[in-house]
Amino acid sequence: MSFSVIAYPQEKAARYRLLLSQLAALTDGERHPIANLANAAALLYQGLPEVNWCGFYLMDGGALLLGPFCGLPACIRIPLGRGVCGTAARQDAVQRVQDVHAFPGHIACDGASNAEIVIPLHHAGRVIGVLDIDSPTPGRFDETDQEYLLLLARHLEKSCNFDRIGYAISS
Image (cartoon, rainbow, N blue to C red):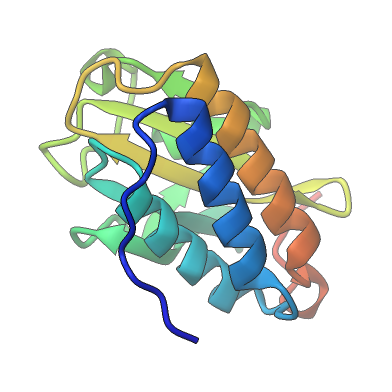
């Protein structure tokens, strides 16, 4: 398989539709979560403008553990309820933060980040991790980003066999 950098559409929804189709092609026939999440992180990092970090944290021992990502080295373990990622996982709710410096308890792994969006990932009715995307541009993420990133997350939930790894928040 080869993949080359392409010119993405400038219109946001069209860009996301292309990214969704590329993700579907990348995950076709592959069910391993690490491989699919690694390709998803790389695809989004390369395909989205004004992004300085993109990756996944997966549940491990009641906390979020760093998974596949693109960007600068990151925090390895995030307790539930801490920072934007821990809050998204604890509340099982998307966190779209226009100014991370105003977010109580924000964890600054990359000082260049100013905005963040975090999408919870699910398996068997439980949160198993999060998709985390940071931007140096304040206010970078809007409703369109959230809508399409939710679709991307749902695709990953369906295309990955998370049974084999057992990520989940402890009951």
